[in-house]
Image (cartoon, rainbow, N blue to C red; front, top):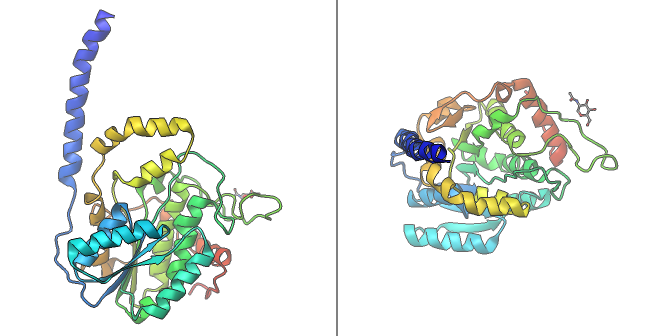
Length: 337
Ligand SMILES: *[C@@H]1O[C@H](CO)[C@@H](O)[C@H](O)[C@H]1NC(C)=O
């Protein structure tokens, strides 16, 4: 017992110091986007712009003079977020539109409204994301896994429906927020479609966070390839390990044990993760930096190009995913050129 306590009295301070050094490294190595590009006369859309890094992205765009559309599921929260952004920036061109990425019908309605009401679209940020810690069978309206459906299929359809507007406004950009979590996806995607009578999900193997984030990168690359000559630039990124509501949403919408664990761990998470403003910099870099048009198709981390996993760079799989995504979302797709 005495030995243990003596050991701990040494060990704990050493761990704290090591941790502080590590965290200092993380913080001081973070790059910030400092270019003062203006966005007057430009229109931007940020999915999930009511909270987390989506909100900070929207705030930054508004500060630069853009018209900003917050595409959100919860209108009340989105209105509050828009009000706060308007107050802080003095920019009145911040609007809220309803978008539920877990419903293809909602994605279509949203896109139709945008096409009717907006003259142009310069930057689309596919930012909204959902995570779940444990597998729990939840499906979207269209019978996709909830996480995969929101993170990939919803954004896939959204981007494609808005593509003509993006082309019309070119040079324009599509920025898709992925995650380094895609590296945990170790198997090629199984894109088999199942009979609904047999399986609970239409694409039973397309589920969960890591596969959805892998799909985000493949989508970003394939879009870049397809639009190489249209002036629509597409990139994806890892925003950092950030203390955002994604953790709370994932952990408290689970068993009571995860809930308890969340409240125990959240101070530690707050201490060990970068904050939301720091976590928005790579999105801003991708959306605004002059170097990006030459780097279409790339994946970014900490404001620089980074190689994603080998699976994420499998172009053949990206093409097949694109085809399957067309079938899944009912989109008429031109054959890959
Ligand atoms: C994909 O899933 C189907 C069942 O849904 C299975 O029959 C098939 O073997 C799987 N393919 C691979 C490559 O794992």
